[in-house]
Length: 128
Image (cartoon, rainbow, N blue to C red; front, side, top):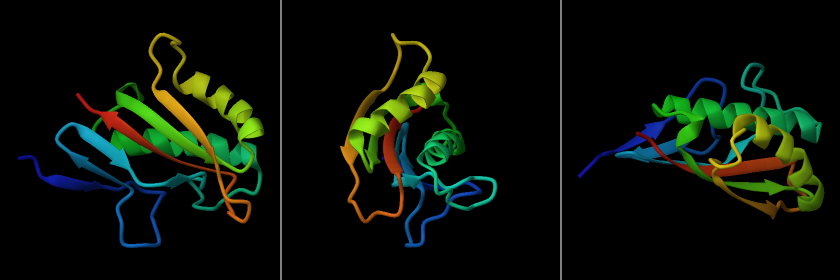
């Protein structure tokens, strides 16, 4: 049986003692990822900047595990306002996954009103 491996990358770290993602064999599951800037390690206040950053973090995560964005099977997003958030996500989504015939599944849910983030996500990938 394959051993579980914690996946981490520079520019993102959880406050709790959990990895950014975990991999067993060819399956990768991320923990919650936020829109923190991977270069400055700060959280922008604007939703658009957080959304751009979250896609950077997704790419960094799957690459740290040895995969590419083509290996991503499903992404769950949580946004403050799902109606507005979906529209803002769609631009970055189409950039990362330009082939409409080969995109991951996606689900968008509402974040709590008091959440300091505009967007968070988790995802599953099958690598190789």
